[in-house]
Image (cartoon, rainbow, N blue to C red):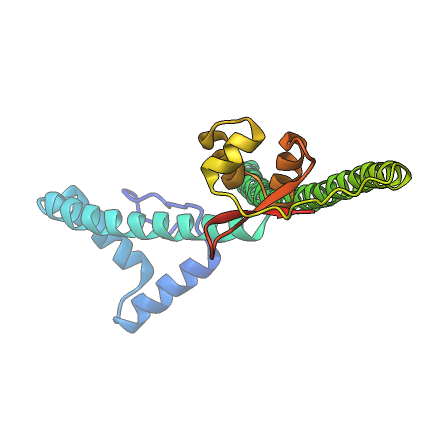
Length: 231
């Protein structure tokens, strides 16, 4: 026969064995049994104290649920950080890798542009220096050509006068003012001044030689303020 009595039924339910053992131990520590504690809880829940139990149990349940949810979220975050199998985590990692790649490409492009600008400036400076050197060489070559032609002309004249027994006294050329040089070259004073300022001294000498009817070159002396002949 069952010990539950005529008006009593045997109640059974599934419960984690460890929790059930802890529950029994807790009841024993308080001088009661698990069955008595459960019956008391049922009576209280069905009786006048139901609201109180609902309120107390509900608040405690909310707190426990909050705690459980918080623990689950923290566990999920830790698991996601330590695992690459999660689709969400893979997406985040892919985005971060893409951002790192874009930042690296932008940085490399910026450094490349900066290096290119510096190289272009260096190349331009070298080209300017080479052009200046070639202009100087060209001016020197023009002067040498003019000197050679003048010497050839003088040699021909000297040979003619010697053969003709004529002796011609060549007067020494005197320094000229800007006005005097302009008249001699057949140009305006402004042209003389402009060419003197814009051209290097060797090129100005070559320019004046090309204008001078006797083939003399002229250079400006800043100390005297006059133009002196260059043979």
